[in-house]
Amino acid sequence: MSINNKINVEQIKLSVENLDLFYGNNHALKKINIQIPANQITAFIGPSGCGKSSLLKCLNRMNDLISNIKITGQITVDNENIYDRKQDVTQLRRKVGMVFQKPNPFPKSIFDNVAYGIRIAGIKDKEKINNIVENSLKRVGLWKEVENRLQDSAMSLSGGQAQRLCIARTIATHPDVILMDEPTSALDPISTQVIEELILELKESYTVVIVTHNMQQAARISDITSFFYLGELVEVNPTNKIFTTPENKLTEKYITGRFG
Amino acid sequence: MVKTKIYNLIGYTIIGFLCVSTILPIIAMILFIFSKGISRINYEFLFTVSSSMETGGIFAPIYGTIFLTFITMLIAVPIGVMSATYMSEYTKKGKLFYLLELTIVNLAGIPSVVYGLFGLGIFVLLLKIGISILAGALTMGVLILPLIITVSYQSLQAVSENIREASYALGASRLQTVVKVILPTATPGILTGIILATARVAGETAPILFTAAAYYLPSLPSSVFDKTMLLSYHLFAISTQVVGVSDEQKYGVTFVLISVVLILNLLAILIRDKISKKLGVHK
Image (cartoon, rainbow over all chains, first blue to last red; front, side, top):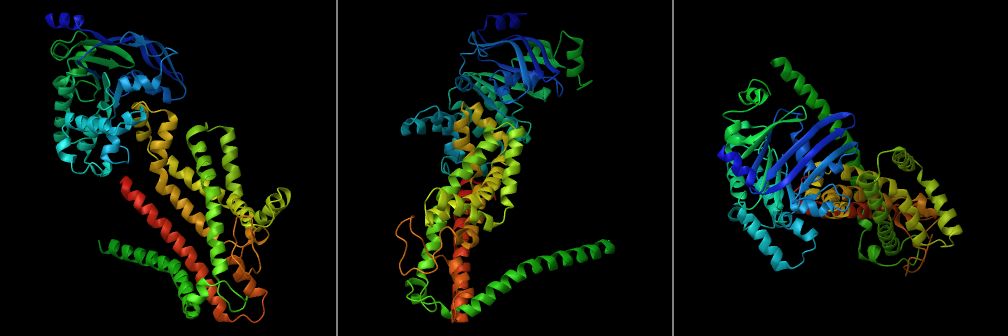
């Protein structure tokens, strides 16, 4: 149980308490309680429609964009309630960045894509912007591939490159947490491997929460795995425990591929 | 196999034939006017202000048409694009929205001469602007607003939800998202609407008949409060109201009118392509 103890003493970055989420009459998330430690990779797994993406989108309030949604309970980031009235959503989203399922670069130049977040945050100093863009692209290993064509449209990048660009774009705003919603499901195996290695590197500086359909992926990269089923959080445990000796029968069935 | 091939062949032949039959009349018309009017085209015809309706140079109507088109766009494009942005990005799709949409569709169906009379009543008489480029441009502006709004709205709606999300996830406000991501992405589509509208303004006759056009003026308009000669109205006048104008002169004017419209279109298409290329999106 040494791993468990180790996790408990880790600093808690994100905490979800008694969260319920309704789309109209559909009760999509039921009394969710989960704590996400800093500088770890936490994976959300479960079959389609289990609510894992919905929960992820609560963590930076992207669900605010959906009408007819009702959320009760509490989510804290660094002990601050993000659903508090005083919470500035744009500030929150800078602190809790997000990478999406399909690479979604803006139809702008590669440079402008990465610079977008800091520019809208009000940074005008050209040298500072140049530095941040360069560092962010280096961090995701894209710099060498694009340094001579920063002014080309980002639409000219391959799928894997575009997804790394989207990660660089998120990093550029200096978030604490990076949420990833199935970031490799639209990519080929080689690009997937590159992104997975990148995610492992990122956890030194960021807290990563990743939703994945791919159980092997969760096993390969995450420290903690949480299994969702029909809107409920069934089990949270260190990844090596959940994939070897899961506590819950349902988790075991899912992991061994008997449903899902 | 053979049967499929024969069906394909027949299908392609029919489509090809129909395709040619849509292009052919346009080409024929342009070639006809070109061949009849080209002999009249020279420097004096294009760039001198006429001393007589029958034979003189037509710089005044050319200048007037370009001037009026420019002022019309200056008025209608910002209003049209902002209306479309409001409809696409800000309103909820409720009753008010559908009423708005219905109004715009209906406006697009009103005959242009009605717009002319409306412009005369509102801009020329009620607001006392008088018959002038400004009154004509305002009238034309109202005429092309539905076109600009509809096309702009559609291109804004075509902007992928993915990149809106990307912008919000980076901490952008709604206004920042609209101004910095959505509008630039929709620009090629919006420009298509503006291209269509430009051609329409340069060629329309009825709306400017009572609001801006002068039958004959010996000088160029110096401000938006002056009347002006216009190519479309000039052609109408020399074809129906002036006796003794040679056919060559008429075809010459027609040729210039078509050329102005085509050149304005071409310019706008070139600008659009340049922007599309910069954005890396294909039209």
